[in-house]
Amino acid sequence: MIDLDRRAIAHVLADRRWLVLTGAGVSTDSGIPDYRGPGSPARTPMTYQEFVRTPEGRQRYWARAHVGWSRMRGAEPNATHLALTRLQRAGRLTGLITQNVDGLHERAGHREVIDLHGRIDRVICLGCRDVTPRADLHTRLAALNPGYESRIGEIAPDGDVVLGVTDDFRVAACTTCRGDLKPDVVFFGENVPKDRVQRSYGLVEQAEALVVLGSSLQVMSGLRFVRAARKRDIPIIIVNRGATRADDLATLKVDAGCAETLAALAV
Image (tube, rainbow, N blue to C red):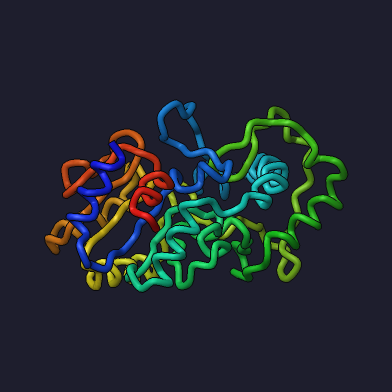
């Protein structure tokens, strides 16, 4: 099957340079679960509105995120991240847009990645908008909550951990203005910054093909770029386990893993 897919992909791409759009399925081999892959349990991630509405909401989020960060920060780039870095170095790619917030593309050596939904390794103040490293906040939270990060819970896709009681967790404030801190990521119910969207559309305009890896494209933040590629009438290849919202737009849909598909292309 992969051999047939390899030939089909090679035929569609030919000598074209391509733009890559990645989703959570790219990072599952690094131990980070996804939201909508086959067999994934139902998830109810915190929305932006819930986060900003009450101190209790922020307390629940940061308690879970503090425990989860202890595990997520240890995730390493996998074969897909490394293959994409090799493709960039070989001049095959025109750009990479990721819906993931884990920073693994950059850790694999990829340059000029558009982190569409932000980065979990940064923290932003909702008051003064100061951006600081997540590692600094983790140290502060560990001091405020000794031993808390050793609690046990199922790790969730955004790097937090499912916990029961969290009302004993102490939340840290911004060291500059004492404002509320939020991970520098786009929550559900929050808009992707306009400059990132425009830069991404610019990459679609430059691309000779679009390859989607590991995304169900259920949210408009990624789907819109596939629709833009379709309007340009450039080839679209989607590699994802299970159906996506853009299967009808694809020139070729490959129902397989990202790493094995890229390996079959000998990259």
